[in-house]
Structure formats: structure tokens, C-alpha cells
Amino acid sequence: MSTESLVPLPIVLPLFGAALTVVLGRSRVAQRVVSIAVLTAMLVVSVALLAEADQEGHVVQVAGGWSAPLGIALVVDRLAGIMLVVSTVVLLAVMVYAIGQADAERERIAFHPLYLVLAAGVSASFITGDLFNLFVAFEMMLAASYVLITLGGQPDQVRSGMTYVVISLVASTLFISVLALLYAATGTVNMADLSVRLAEVDPGLRAAFSVMLLVVFGIKAGLFPLFFWLPDSYPTAPGPVTAIFAGLLTKVGVYAIIRTQLLMFDTPEWLGTTLLWVAGSTMVVGVLGAIAQDDMKRILAFHIISQIGYMILGLGLLTVAGVAAAVFYVIHHIIVKTALFLVAGLVDRRAGTSRLSEMGGLVRSAPVIAALFAVPALSLAGLPPFSGFLAKFALVDAGLEVDRWGIVAVSLAVGLFTLFSMTKIWAGVFWGERDQEPTRTPMVDGRFGAPVWMVIATGGLVAASLAFSIWAGPLHELSLRAAGDLMDPARYVDAVLGGRP
Amino acid sequence: MSIVLALVTAVLFACGSWLLMQRRLTRIIIGIGLLGHGANLLLITAGGPAGRPPLIGADPVSSLSDPLPQALALTAIVITFGVTAFLLALGYRSWQITTDDAVENDIEDTMVARRAADGPEGPVDDGEPTTSELGEM
Image (cartoon, rainbow over all chains, first blue to last red; front, side, top):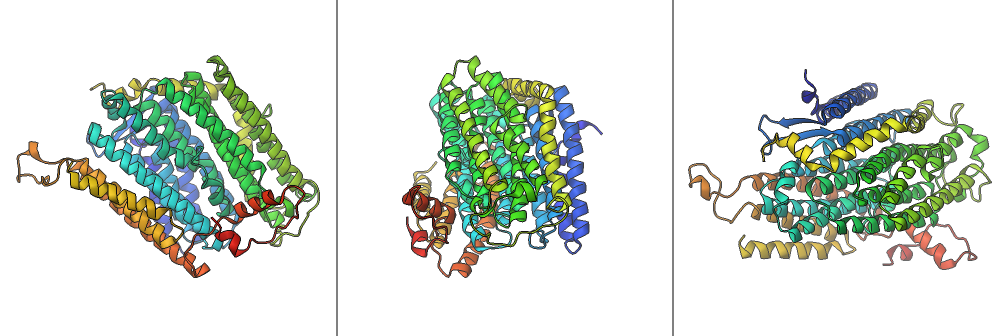
């Protein structure tokens, strides 16, 4: 079996698993076994694909036996391979966490199938080489996420779920409109083909397409000024669901921005400057929004926004080093952010609330949770020797290379505010005393203050973030190679269209 | 692209966007539906002028309209249909809970706004927000 034939597996496996878990709906054990087996198989396939992509540059498979641009191309390049591996690791960890939680309310019959469909949508977004297929992948992922965010049907879930569904639908409608206009202008939706044909389109029109796609994916990624829906909707979902949304969904938007802008458009200077302004505003607004909050999950949700700014900053520099830093940052962020939300879930369970004013003193009653929080929190704030420091260092270095002093200064200042926010959570949750009684009764189980598999899953991600710092050198070189591919769209086009114009 | 289809698309987008800004859930859902129709129509018109169905044998191949956007629109319609059904179910659930289809402000947002209005020295009142606060624009 050649590696090319592995390419569709990250989409096919979870969909097959989803169907199987529906059939096995009566047996929770069988559902769990299928989910874990499917995600593990996906991880193996993803690693194999990344290894192959790193050697060959691009692994291409055209579905249905039609040649590109007629058939739907599935392409794994270095960036897609990296994203696949990181997202599958996170999906697997969160699945273990959800199983560990073993909460009848959370783990309904529908949870496993939906989660696997979400996994399929996420991987499809990464490996598709066709813009309309990207839309379908987004819808697959979003449709699953709509149900996951409202699973349980509690009043606050319905209210915030509504905002989430409506804003995502508006973005999807815009996406279809852009697709229609792009097709009318070029006669293709294959990304490699678009890259060739858009070069012949009038520059003004091209700029309009580029900005429209930026808006569409900006809504999904939570860019300033399109982020307002995010902090309201994410925190109300069940713990594992929030973690996977926070870790993956916005980053799929960031991936789509990086992919479409660099592959399909010639990214003129003004776009870079615009992106830098957007990045700066996203960072500042996100971090300031976090300071005003009292709810732990909402503080973390606002930090997603400010962190998205860092990734866009790397892209906005429009240099190989900048894009490499952005890719590097995405890897770090997916792992660390998911870990933080998993810890927030543990805290919520242990303290019976996620409001800072209603808890305190957890460092004595649950030292393991405190330790699990400390590592990713310091990493998020960018303290050495954790992964966040290395990712930020790469960004700052890339920024100074092209003399973008202003944005580098902003990013460093935002780092300080992030540290302030993390200390606020630390002081509120782990030190001090409760100001008020929590609304729910705290749950205490086991030596660690939480079910053992929840702790193992969280610990696994924290360990992954530490491993990231240890192997930062090879990972950064991999990011540099990925960025080299991204900055030279001709390689992608050659791989997909086979050198044919 | 015929001027009538262009106008219809424009009207659908305009009405959809207007309905989307309303505070009533039913109007928002109808607005989403209209926006979806507008986008699908735009997709169809991208395939060429109306009145030339892509049926093999009906016309010479060169004068047929492009079938691909029609296939794309079909996919988009199915997706819109499914999601609208979900949205209606969600709207119904919301009505079951609140017996009103107005969209409320977010509780946490309201509480942060109240803290800001009280100032740092103001009274700390973390009770549930009142109905009038949630309804404020």
C-alpha cells in the first residue's frame, strides 16, 4: 500500500467510526472502544503522512479517479501534516478526558458519533485541496459542533448556542457567496488551479476576494473585530467540548487563512500591514477583555482571541521566518490551550464553580490540579523555558528581522498582561479563601481530586507541551520547511496539477 | 447573468441581513434562510445565463450552462436545510425555556457591564441579572 492511499483515511476513519458508534449506541463500552481505536489509528496514519510529506514535500490523492482540477484533490503538505498530527493528539487526549469524566449527563449516546464527525471535519479541512470541499469540511465540523455545544439543552447553553450557530451560519453564507464570485471569475474551485488563474484576474478584484476570504475565516478564527461571539459561547459547553473547541476550531480558521492567503493570492505589502494591524488589535482587545472577567473559563476564552493575534502577526510579516513562527505558535497554542481548558474543567468539578470569587485555596486541597495548571499557564504567558517562550521568541525574532518594532512591542506588552491574567486565576483559584459559597456542591474523588483518567489526559497534554520545548529545535526546522513551501505556491501547484498549467 | 436574478439576489441579501439584526429569534431564523437562498442563487448565476439546461443532447455542448455550480448549489442547499432544521429545534427549545422568543443579553456580559457602572468601590452585587437588564440593547 503506497502512502498516497493513506491520504483519505483521516477523513474516512472517523466517519466510519461515527457510523459504528451510532449502531453500538446501546453499549457505552463498545462506543468508547471504537472512539479510542479510531482516534489512535488516525494518529498513526497522520504521523505516517507527516513523515512522507516531510520527505516528498506533498502527498496528493485525487478522489474518484478524476485528475485535478476536475477531481477533488486531497493534499497533505508539511503544514497539513503538522496540523493533522497535533489535532489528532489533542482529539485523543480530550476523548480520554471525556471518558474519564464518566458523567451520564455529558456522555450521552450522541456524544461519540458527534465527536468523531467533528474529528473528520477538522482533518478534512486540513487536507482538502479544493475550496468548495473546504466549505463542506467546515460545515461537517460546525454541524457537529452546533449539537455538541447545546448537548444537554440547558438554558444558558441554548442562549449562547444560538449566538454561535447564527454567527457561524452567517460566515458560511458569506463563504458560499465568495465561492460563487470566485467561480464566476475563474471557473474553478480547486485551490491549486485558483492560484494559477487568479494571477490573471484584475488586481482590484483579486484584492476583494482576498479580503472577503479573510473576513469569512476571520469570523471562524475570532479575529478583531469579528471575535465577539467567542467568549459568550465557548464557556457554556460541557468541559471536554469547550476544550476541543478552544484548542482546535479557531485554529482551523487560522489554518484556512494561512493556506488561502499564501497559496491563492500574491499577498501584497498592504495586506501584510493590514494583517499586522488586525493582529495587534486582536491581541490587545483579547487580553484587555480577559482582565475584566470573573469566570475562569471566560478569562481563558478571551485569551484564545489574544493568542490568535500572535499567529496572524507571524503571517502578516510575510517572510519565511514569520510564517514559520506562526506555524510554530499554532502547534504550541493548540496543545497549551486545550490543556488549560481541561484544567479549568477539573477545577470546575473540584470547586463546584468556575467563578474566581466563589473559590480559593485549591493549592492545598488539590495540589495536582494546581501543578497541572501552573505549567500551561506559565507557558501561555511566555515564560522560559516553556513552549510559549520559544514560540514568542521565534515571532519576535522574525518581527525584528524586518524591522516591525511597533508590533513586536505590542506583542511583548500583551505577554505581560497575559501573565497578569494568569496570576489572577492563580490567586483566585489556588490561593486565598472563598468570598462566596459556590452554586453547586464540589465533587471530590480519588487521590488527585478528580477521576484518574481525567488527570492522565490533562497530564498527557501538559507533558506534550513540555516535550515541545525539549524538541523545539527540530520542530522549528520543520516549521521553517513548511513555511518555505507556503511562501512558494508554485510547489503546491506543481504537486497537484502535475506541472500542467 | 440576468438583471432579474441579480436583483432578486440583492433583495434576498438585503432582507436577510435586516431580519438578522432583529431581536426576535423567529425573524433571525427566517433571515438566515433568506441569506442562504441569496447565496445559492448567486452560486447558480455563476454558472452562466439562465435558460440553457445542461442536458446532453438538448443543445450543442458549447452553449450549455456550466453544471458544476448547480451541483455546488445542491450541496449548499442540503447543508442549509439541515442546519435550518436544527436552528428551528433550538429556537423551539429556547421558547420552551423562556416562553418568549426574544434573544437575551449574555449574563456574564451584563454582570461585567454592571461592575463597570458601579466602579471599583461600588457595591458588589453578583446576584443573577434582572430581566430588564438582560433585555437592554
